[in-house]
Image (cartoon, rainbow, N blue to C red):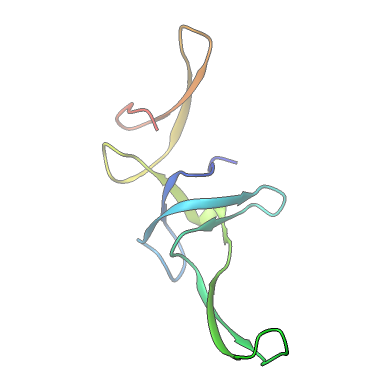
Length: 102
């Protein structure tokens, strides 16, 4: 997947289009990512013995990674990434548009 944990991402499609957030968790098997403050849904919880208070709970659900794009820190826009090999043998992700490290 092109998205990793702790990346700053922008939603490029869906009802939260244009919102920014930090990736909390990536689920590669399903191709989804949990993003902070994105894709809230309301869940109706029944009152139980363990949880004495029922009601409507807001929770975040994972969003499909095809609806997310990495935010470039320099451009501050959605960015495509390129992997560069550095001289010391390590790999680095960079923005295609400006070349800034992500």
